[in-house]
Length: 446
Ligand code: SF4
Ligand code: SF4
Image (cartoon, rainbow, N blue to C red; front, side, top):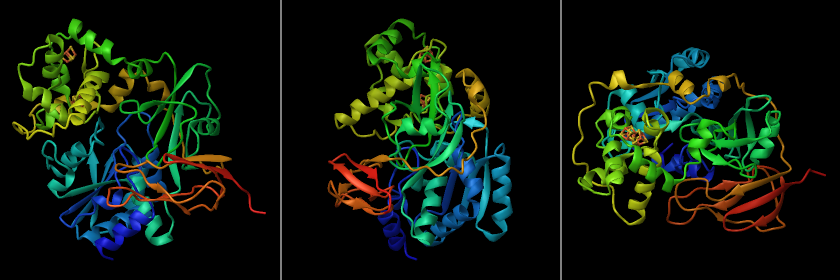
């Protein structure tokens, strides 16, 4: 198979990164890569989905990885995983003799081991330069479920219609489910036995980088987890931060201790991001070092500075990401880094242990098993968004009143742009279509 043929299959089957920003998978294929990394770091507390999917579909995922590597001519594949995911590591080891170009790369039990810049450093020793992408170091990084989707598309002709999601926290039966894309969060919480408390807030994604969500929000190709937490839980209060109040608090309480910079995951790799310098400029109103402000572009948004490091409970990540968005909005390009320092020799002593982070966030009591459920779920309705990936939204090709079947294309990639294909996730009738989504109601076969 050629790279172009594989890219076409990925695009026609709607394969985007099954997590993070949902980068269309076809756009990552590059013949300059010598290494393909399978990211099974799952470094955020409470998330379990990747290791479960990899343990269950080991052969399929390693075959998908092998196919990608062979197609682009990469020399090696590395499964980046933590030792503590013992049963998944054992399942991989059992299959490795059939895949001589695949090896296991053990990651430390830290956060954010799954930030691809950190994953690449920990498994290959290569440092992706500030503002660069993995291919600059000869690497392509794919998420576990993305590669399963590649296998399903190539060997089973199945497009992306479903998603694996861990539902945990204050629910009666924490578990990981496979559900049609477009399922409402309310239905997912009911699948997990319903909320176990009255006053709760839903977090979509991990506690560090996830966002607050509503019952009416729906599953997309990037949804990995729903965490149901009490509305007064510290993680929820942190996420409800008001930016103006955060700015005022920095002015009154930032003591310039620089712990945020000392523990910053990107700074420790030599990237020129120094959150304390940005906080200093914000608190004094004086920009003594303009480059320090521009370096906000190199923040990964991992959240260590505000969820773990800052002794004053300030919000450097929130403010830096707002600044980064403002720079982008005003057309200020990512600066050429003033310097790329060597990896900090203190890095090994400043890594954030995941267990410690879980305790610090007040989440240890929710770190319970959430096994992969065998239940097949058939929602009555799904709302399928046309913007589930990085790039331009897909263009609908169905109308209200049309009958659609699972796997049928309902939106095509935008022309001449980074975009992707979207498929129906249930058999049903299209009730409504607009530029943003299609609403499909289940229709049972006669
Ligand atoms: S850790 Fe907090 S108090 Fe210390 S410099 Fe950073 S923002 Fe300021
Ligand atoms: S969120 Fe904070 S710790 Fe993480 S990269 Fe950005 S500045 Fe550094």
